Length: 369
Image (cartoon, rainbow, N blue to C red):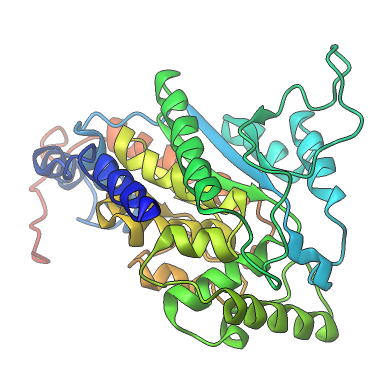
């Protein structure tokens, strides 16, 4: 009963802090687009997203100048079932390289003018840390709620309390970003084995067979894919997660970084910061947030569609249309960062283009509405 009360309190705490979309700001943004000397709606989704961001923030004066990609990192006990090509130690290695600016998302973020923030939600503990400046993890934000998850084919991945704490930590990361005037976030991840957990979550939330939602991840061969499918099936069978209880799902078959990303999407709605979904695990976490509190949808925007089997399914379940289709499946927030320059371009048109009135041209009429 205590768990149910905590869930009830967390839900209402979040729901009560989320204001409805600002219709006045939306109309003002749409009016601005329609006044620009071009065919109405001709920039498609780029127009829509600027209007939706205006509705989220409450102002048609949209500002996306301060960007950050939040990379939630965690390890997964289910890797013991041979569901990944590499071991869990790669998670921390990759996280450290991110803090040095040496990974793919770092290079892309530099071009996009985006800060990179690496967050430890529950990586396996390192044995080479110390308290001096040589600590290789000192630039990683510590929000850890556990030393990697347990193998969910044998029991719950984490406790319910850990799942709730991970969600709250994700929300807190976004609150701090808001306080630093960040006005656009990309929600990414790093965690060996996390597509297995994301597949399990997707199977439960969409009520689909494991085989239909499980892909090769970082590049499994056919034998490895079969092991992965069986691990997802076993995890769901052993734990019997309640598909109507997001905390139960995350705690039994999820991951620390997946719960943290769920919290980040919830926080985006609470603190009125547009959040870009990245790939498959990010989309699974976003759907968890939407299922937990549907009002969160106003803050969530699809960047691209993952090449993993569940990529399209998850976006469809949230009525999300991706801005690009590039066949990406790297993670780290790369897909979300890739669309940031597109949004900058859209915003430049929105702010700076001449209008029908300025050019003394008869304005186009909107016959679509």
